[in-house]
Length: 209
Image 1 (tube, one colour):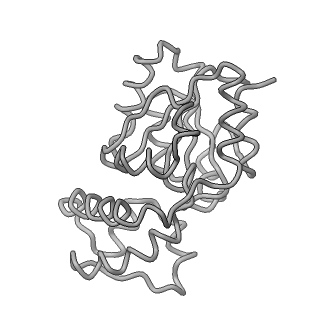
Image 2 (cartoon, helix red, strand yellow):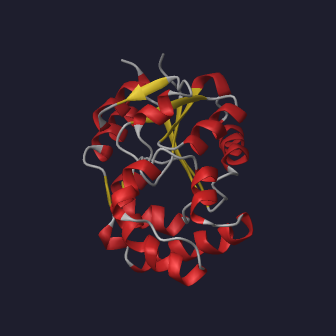
């Protein structure tokens, strides 16, 4: 199936930020008094949902907004260290050329998204909605649907984490799981995504021929 509106997550989907996240994580953990990540456990922890991860590291829900804002601030100060995945610009260019509307819905800040993606990619993004909780994306997806004028059945959300899949389900849009993001593809496949993408170039196929 091809789609008229493709909405993208940012971190781990369009932006190669996982290594940056790991580098900033332990610094922020010390500041906010939750458990550091042992490098030997990274692959294990990637299989957990966001809620499971918070439980295991001792991060209470009430601290999440402050921790998220701190991570965003650290990225803002070091944005040059994060780049789009190779092939993102070309793939989104192909989608736009097919008449597909493009959008980004991300819990990261709009200025980080804009800076890191750069003008060539951002010039193709028709709708940008950022700064919500990682558990609050469904409402923003519905907001983008209203702004775009595209029906939910003609829309797909592309992401790399279980929270993205959950948001897509709540907003009644299809979900495409990518293999190159934060969560292992197998963890996402267990929840039945509508599409599975194993190469960045496959993003272009969301718009059909």
